[in-house]
Length: 609
Image (cartoon, rainbow, N blue to C red; front, side, top):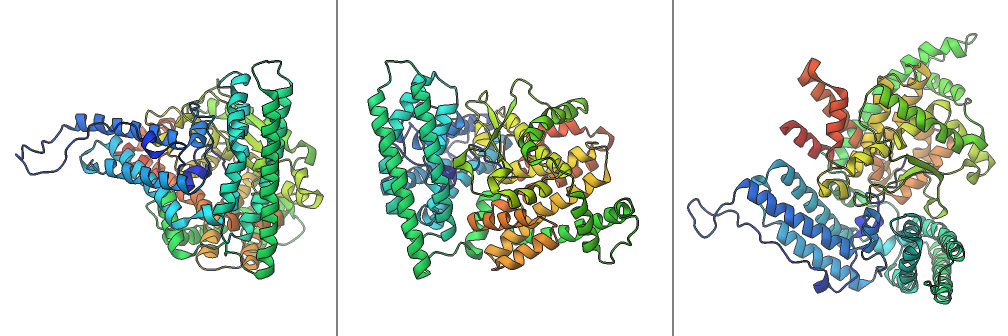
């Protein structure tokens, strides 16, 4: 259920954009700015028209985006811009200083505009840019994950994108890779310098995921051996690949030693971030009308509503599956027995990935036949096994999508083969992702969920709204899409599917409840596992992996329920206001046309229009 969008979840976006040139070389010329404010009739500060101000703001937004693309070649690559793709950012103190200087300069230029005086489209872009810049500052100066999260350091992802994205002939892409490989040793040396009292959990993740870099290095070597070209310096490639392998090996060994020392001295940083950091992170990441505490309370209420609804369905289904046995008096036990019985229906272990591939065309056809929203048959979704360097977070499925500068590139639906987890855990996952849940998963990740939403986002006329994607909108849309598809008849309103959808939605609700309860209220592992097993009806495999994810992330798990609640509320508001004039397809297309902006921003724009 986790999405790995190239821009939205990029470590570089969250930890601060990185500079590859001296600060004075990254600053593009600043456009002339309007003078705002002043008293009526003050000739020294004339008011400009809304149209002129909007044009000047758009020019500033474009300038800031271009500067960010230069500041972080890695972020640029994920957006489909490759001018500086051969430059690797070394995450050292000098880079953090360049980020600081950029943020200060950008905020100063942005604050020359009074957002109240801007047209709505520019006003919302102003808010998104301001939030992004404040986030960059906060993550670097206050959150400081670069210091205690070793898992943020991994060169494999960008190298893999360059190798597998056909934006240029393979010889040119290999030359870019060769250039980046030169700086891999310096990259990991900077990482060692940065790390101070990390968490055990992020250290363990870093050790596992960086092992995946060796597979990427092998893929590069294989590609090199398959090409008959005199342009490529094979000797230098061999030297730099060997040096890169040594650097990664040294990094992993260094982490292993640190891990042992932290365990022996009980000196690791706790993974819980506490209320103050959590609320600020929620404010910057989710950009919701809810506070974290308010969303937590709403999730508790939604849990009770879902339990009551599922109890009614379980009561109705009980005679079909237990004709000779009276139903338990306890509603939660009744639901659990039905869920347990239904979970036995699932695909064979060896067919898991193939079954996902088979369902994608069926979902596409359903959306088309029911005219639910626009699709793009020219951009098919590619189902693949999750690359090794992306494994280890507990996510079974994710999506890797191109950025708006290269919308024609392939979108990958990453699926981790369940035999990767061993026989016992794989069997548990098969029950978790049973016949009904697997359909909901594919709606969420693929059509009309993440894959479809991101196709629309890449067509948004506002680069700001597409580039600075809001995780709550993205995840919330995918959760909303699940319910919408069932409402429109996917699965022929089968009660078993609706019951399993309730179980799936409980997962979303408990994501919020547990993330807040663990990081803010100090809930321990045993209680979290118990709640997931007994009140969210999750398999042991899902519950244990979710606990791991809670220890590795903060706030992101709340994005599913936050976005879903706001999108569903918005749709119901429009239905009530428009009555018979409400058109579901029009609502979906308009909602998705604003890129991956926060739901509250989209609601403002849709209401004004």
